[in-house]
Image (cartoon, rainbow, N blue to C red; front, top):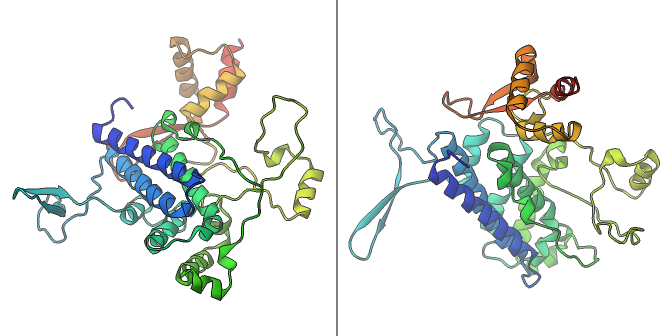
Length: 346
């Protein structure tokens, strides 16, 4: 991350470490109540990631003093008295809820925001309880929390800092989990879980259909056992895209209660939908279409020529619209690939 302030690098590394520890904790078979440790570490990960994002964009993520009467902002401080009599003072950093508020602003309906806000009260409620039965019932929200975290890194930082290359599928035993949210009142009373279940039901009921069905709020999947593949070297597990299925196969899945999710481009605030390629996406697609392509002077000259003739093929977005000095990021219309092909094929 060349050029980033050291504190941003530190916070990003802390965020990645916390997220990987959260997954490691969740996947440990010896841990019976997985959600507690996972949610706690993911809240730390998201908080550090937001802090890195704000500092990257020249925003100080500290609570300001109210009515200080000063032109320059003054910040609240936390004071620690040391045994040797010395006093340490440090600015009070934004907590996760404040980071969410500052990042999403007035967009209170965003499914990623709803997913994050689901976990803050839940984290505080489960910290004094042992409820391993809860794990399966909130798995969808937990999985979305991780996917959204990785998407945020790839959107605002560099894809090489993505955590998905460090993770793999955990081994599973074939069983159908029990939905603890639908447990009887006596079961909930015995487990001291009635308030938690009431909170989860109330929160989910407050969501719109679009929010609840969004994979950014809760990621759901169905694992279907199949016979061994004909190829001895085929992967044992793979994801099937909706567009790769025949109409007959889609109907068969629908008949057993499986609703497919169609692939959808993630919409980024302030970027028109047709600008769907980041610079890294563009290079990846160009290498597929033009295997001999090299990012040399010829490439950059041709890119400059294309954008000079067709400036509408690129959209530049400020990462923080409220900050005139904010870094910027370019997005490209997929049509630019055809223009590259014309130049390289002549």
